[in-house]
Length: 107
Image (cartoon, rainbow, N blue to C red; front, side, top):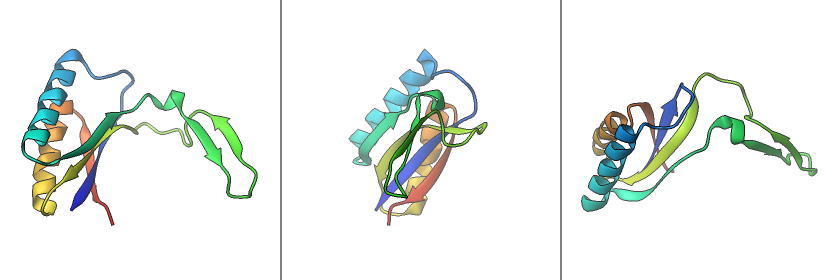
């Protein structure tokens, strides 16, 4: 089963060099143990563009959809046999990136 592990951040700025080293080591561990599917870091919300085409005419606006203290800073997509393993991996990822994470299974 695949799980989305969302990295939740509540500060401005990118990961420190120590955090990046820990994230790189965690990514290597995921690969070595067969849990790696894909991962990526995201630019700050100020770099976002919102596209709304629900009415048939696309409306494009700069900036985040909502103003919020917490935002999605990155993610991992992992492969795990069950939720218990996914949560263990998420706990290791949270420690590596020094941020909260949210775990959600894919349908």
